[in-house]
Image 1: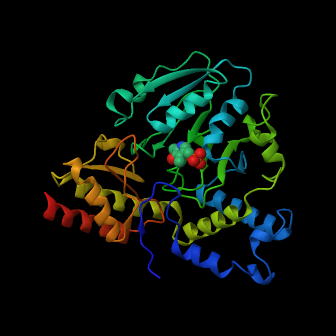
Image 2: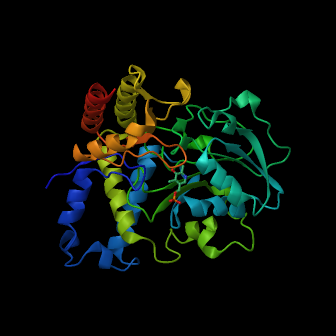
Image 3: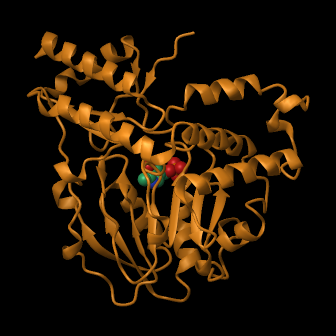
Length: 359
Ligand SMILES: *Cc1c(COP(=O)(O)O)cnc(C)c1O
């Protein structure tokens, strides 16, 4: 068996040891004679797995009891609707920051429910910058402020948190668990699992409890955070296997020293790759230096004609899923927690070799 280096933006690489554990437990989970996948979600085994996953996530992120941790479904995209449905509380508008494709999708969905005040947009720089907070035009009476701390497609990331006097809602799908955050700065954090948490099919939402119970009466029960909180995320059948794998990933993160240790590694990985791009005339990254993502690193080749051979040769060299998003073009290397320094080194070696032969 040869496992290759996977730079996919999502569903993304998972830690090999987690996959190995899952494989060894696939047919017979902990001597129970069946797979965890085949067990009732109401069984003590599965509720125990869910409880353990929640506790480990609480430890990793230092989440206080003031927050509910919810395991939901429908992808982060479903939360684009759940956010206004749970938080508007009769208010007519919400503030949104537009820093890329995921912001845009969140805005489009919120517009079904309220007036969206776009406080700032970086569309004029092709989403290669983050508008400074001083320039934001905050609304008069918004229910909340929504932003995207890491834009997975453009590769721009905030290294600061907006301070406003309404709840801050953050789509952390591609940055959660990459470094420590202060959960108390947020009203709501949500993240699709398939980048840095586990397999697709699961969404984590961390909701300040005082924001529960304000849900619009027309909100489907499945999108109602209070319903999820009251039912320990088991109002209906949750994606039990994804939850189990997420729990194994949380254990893996704890074993590796938690999020401060991950931040150190992630910063080293990103710094190395950006340095390789910046010191070459052949490769380029369009993002302003102070907003460059630690997790998603887009880069272009000096000659777009070489994109195709680059991708073909990379694949032959065991470097997978480097094609950039269709809206940006070029390449994108996603270097989530499960993508190690060895993968980054292999990519840089390949890039330098390709440049030597093709420039
Ligand atoms: C991947 C991603 C999404 C969409 O997630 P789905 O689970 O496919 O709905 C939303 N926001 C961000 C920032 C993402 O990276």
